Length: 154
Figure (tube, rainbow, N blue to C red):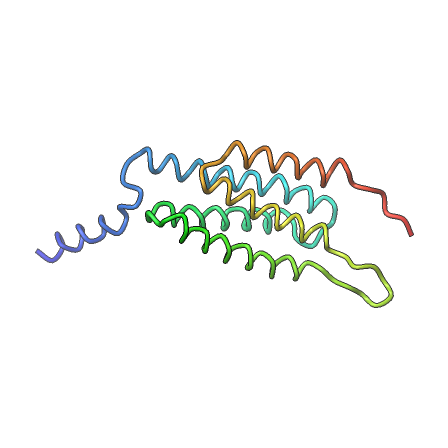
């Protein structure tokens, strides 16, 4: 029957998360990426940076997803390395957009651009299942961004 075939097709389309362990694994990796992106983004937002909480959360989540999907698809490490190269290049464009040079003023946004770059790397680590490395790296980044903030001089 048409409905039976359609239902089987729909089930097949959602089979990438077939069992509870797959669902849990993907949820943990993506939630870790989101939480760590939020940690770094909140710091940037509290500092008045252009790229804040939501931007950092999306960068981290997107980076995790870009690396998680090839792993789920069974891609080889060589192919996954090309995905990493693409993510890195794309993040470079985001970072460049955060950097501004105004006439007769210093360059602004370098720290935010570096934070976006770090957030992408943290998301990649979480997406690869290296959650402890992602957490440690995000904590180190948070220390640099929040505790080592120098007062502005004019």
